[in-house]
Image (tube, rainbow over all chains, first blue to last red; front, side, top):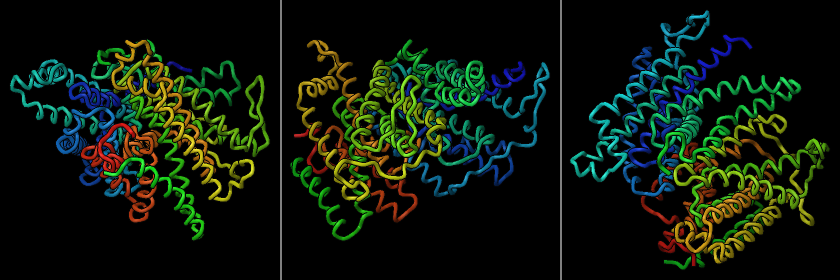
Length: 306
Length: 327
């Protein structure tokens, strides 16, 4: 097991984690501000990917595709918030789960109806394909490196938006006391729509970016949604910082576990059974991580809410 | 408004009459559909014990359904290949006997529910929903990578398991077994609701603190409810596997957890017969709409959305008026 392989896998883990952060950030923001559990968040991820694939297919421009992904997911998010989600803020979590589960059914089948069941492909543009040589002579795909940079930039932007701008103050105030900021003259329902659209846009962006290295298909959002849940449970629901740390932990655990656990078991088991035990354990690794965090801190690493 | 017991009685009569008609008219597919409805109803009755009485919104009940299914699959697989099930220190022979398989399904899913419940009940609210979901996924990914028992492809059991004195390959006889089990569980469920435990659990859902002040431990009540709930759903999983003679990781999928929750809500949360109504309506919709369009899930989604937004209390709530408690 060479050092180069380890560095490569750590970078892969970071890349997976950062992309998961984009999805988890929206989810945790929506829960933190509106107290809403949104199962349909994965559908917004899927909408971003499909919009990007459709626009890239029509225009050939990757940048336009990303813009389309952001716009389509944000618009879908805003519309869903105004038509359905708005009625659920006062409901209990059970109703929220069911209504957003219904939205998944509608979005998934609707997308299948429009685009068909076959996967679509989103090409990595020429100027982002191919490997780059990192210091130390490590070859790494440029596109994945770009994903890490874009993700970090978005994380930084999100931090700036929430900590340093007026809208961020309103969002943070909304988390603490919605009646009070409504009384202070902030249009709370506009703020909610905005937060929901922002979360949706982040998920859509992630869908488009990841769509270029995986296939774009119906149902692509749900595995990501569940990982995002694991992340915000680990990080603490409502905490963006927690989502960031949680996403990196999950990305690294999942990627490194898949490579190193089978190898580790080979040290003291027959190769065939080591591979099978190792890969079974690796597929469960993030859930084991989650239960450990939970036993240690039931409200997550950075959580305050029960 | 119709009294709830009339709806329940009509439902039971229908569940017997429709397969009898199908038998007379020689329509075995209708009997299979009815069996599917009864088994899904049993799974949902299990969830309703945790969800309706205990207030535990579990989005991971597919885990127990899948464990029941794999208990059947693994025991029958070893019986049909004549290989013992090896645990290292000791080994067990496979079996094709339904009662033994049911027992294994009940015990294993109850054990899983105990472990998952112990961990998940440390939390509440949204955390509980997400954690149960994540545990369900953990089993899903585990079975996908479990190549001994078919991995992602699942495995087929060639002959339906046997029940003493009956020929389970005859659709109506297997239907009878499933219906009797469902009725038995419904009866026990009704007894449970009226028992001291049921009353305490009901109180623990509503005002946990008050239950604590009278010296009961709400977490233990909820844990017990979760274990019973998981065991019933596990039993349904074993029957479902026998109906299809096939088990696969799809039994563990979180969509299935969502679907059985939909059955409970569609019929009416916390009503003894709510899950049964939900399952019958769901299977009928699936059959009718599924025959008309490939995209019937859109309609299911719209119906579900309308029920959540405008018709709380589900179908029984619409028919019998909004009362959270059964009569």
